[in-house]
Structure formats: C-alpha cells, structure tokens
Length: 306
Image (cartoon, rainbow, N blue to C red; front, top):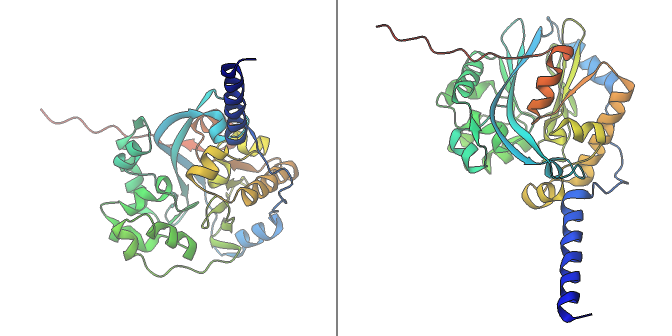
C-alpha cells in the first residue's frame, strides 16, 4: 500500500471519528435520570388563588436551517428548520410572556436568514401588556428581545429573574442587564401565578428552567426550553450534537440527558401532557390544532389615508 493510500485512510478515519463524536453520538447513555414530581407541580399550580390561564399563543420571530444532527444527535444531516419562538399565556389578569426573541442584528449575527420584524413588534406589545415575563434560560435568542427593548424600563419590573439567569444576562454585555432589580430566589418548583409553575432544570445552561402551564380547561403543558430544542430531542431522548452542546454552548451534557430522560418518562406517565420544544416551528404548525394552542396573527398595518 502506498504512503498516499495510508494517509488517505488515516484521514478518512479521523474525519469519520470526528463526525461520529460531534454529530452522531448521543451519550453518555448512563446519564442518571432527573425526574419531575408532577404531584408537587400540580399542587403548586393549584395553590395560588385565582383563575388559571385560558390559552396559549405563539409567534416565530426568526428561522434558519441547520443540519438535523446538530440539533438532535444521530438524526442525520438532512436540514431542519430552527426558529426563535415567543409564547404568550393568556390569563384573566394580564398575559404572561415566555421568552422574548432577539433583535434583527443579533438574528443576522447568529445566521438566521428570515426575520419577522412585525412579529417582534407584537412581542413588544405583549411585554407592554403583560403581567409577568419569564424565560426558559439566559441565551440571547431567548432574552435579547427583552434586554434590547426600546421601552425596557417599562417592562423590566415584570421579569422574574433568578440569580443564575441574571448572571447569564449580565454576561451578554447588554447595558440594560445592569438595570434589573435584585434577582428572585427560586425554589426547585415554584408557582408564579395560578396554573403557572417554574421548574429549575439547570443543564443546558445554569439558569435553565422549564415552565408548567395548566389551563382552566384541564390541558397541561411543559415548556422544555433548550433542553428539548426539537420534538425529536424529547421523543428520541437525544441531546444536541456535541458540535453545539460542547463547542458552541458548552452545556452540562449529562444533566441535559438526565432531564430528557425525565421528560420521556413524563410522556409515558401522562399521555395528555404536551411537552413543547423551544425551537421547532414545524412541530408547532403540525400539532397546534390537536394540542390546543394557536399561532398569533400578525396584524397588517392599516393603509394610509389618501
């Protein structure tokens, strides 16, 4: 065998090993499960006096295409759509906003090819009208729209921010992060409104939390945050590929897998519970009708008078 052939074989082996490690391997398989105490979550949701939320609606601020294996290890290189998604919980006494999107400048820097400025403007109105603003974690595509909002002082006091979330926001070098009030000390499971519970789930980031919502009609939801970016993360119990989770985001992979195992167990024990991934617009489009939430309609501007 020639030296060239040997060198080529070695190169191919290195490339194959790198591909497997960065985009295929979903381990460690022995990561311990992290369980959810649904009895306690429901107890907290029922403990606060008042009426529970009446519905859920969402808007997609920006989208981009990524290799599937980057978002869910081992699912191949076929591209999937990843979206920046903001939610509004409709409540009898003002809505609750989940995440806030990001600015067009940040979207372009992160490689998002489509940006809906009108949707971002509606999210701004949601924050203006909201009773509370909460976040699944502290990365820019979830908190940027809040930190960069032109009316930040009017909405800042509505945000529920833990110490870990605040540290993450401060590290983004946004001036407004320094103007937030003192962080809130959060219990592992804590209600913030009737039917709405924050669940601390550090792993994807130090400040990661999931959000349980129980509606008046009995439907139940858990917003998984970036622990489950796509539905396939949750259904297949696989984290992001290491290309994202180790190199770009540097999450606690063992903890993330543990929470995914816990979500998968929840799905088995509670078939009616809807677990909502954070970046999967195709899932939302396909399941909104059956799962009881809606895509908000971006109102078109009124025509100018002639």
